[in-house]
Figure 1: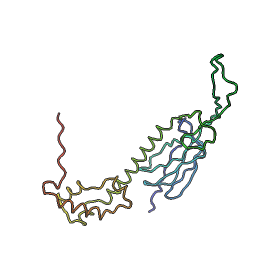
Figure 2: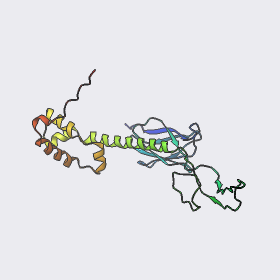
Figure 3: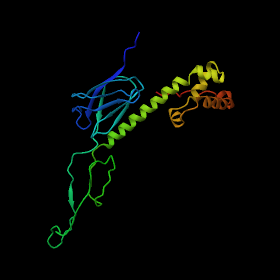
Length: 229
């Protein structure tokens, strides 16, 4: 019996104008290398499964990559990578205190940074305007979301490997001692992320020897204090 094919669907919108769908966005599953493009209404549908990475890219917009923790329909908002603003010419002004008028001999200089996200080369003279396009908050939110998704990946890895059977087979603990040991020495997502690939065997055996050095009364986590009413 064949399993039903899994897929991810959704719509892609412009980040600034959230009601404006984007047609023609490249949608690519980085795991199975399937690709598609969004339709006129921004819709897309692509073969995918939980744990895949799906990339969205379109000319004039920032690339976005989504880690799939589930296959619920997604609304993707792509921020533009440039702003369609004409270059602004700014004239330095030297005030003549006698007539309070601009000095006609002052030369024009130009400097305009239309996309503060890409650090484009600027060969014009120093000075001018730099526009803040309001992308900082969005970028911070995306970084926080990415960190949460990455941490979720490592938490699932730990839960699938650092099991009671795995630990018991390795250090021969049973019952309440096994539970206490695992509560005290379960590796953190930050630790596993920082040592790739993480050596669970070495870590568990080393932790076990540290646990044996503890007095019997300290071989478990202290009880959680009760909150006062």
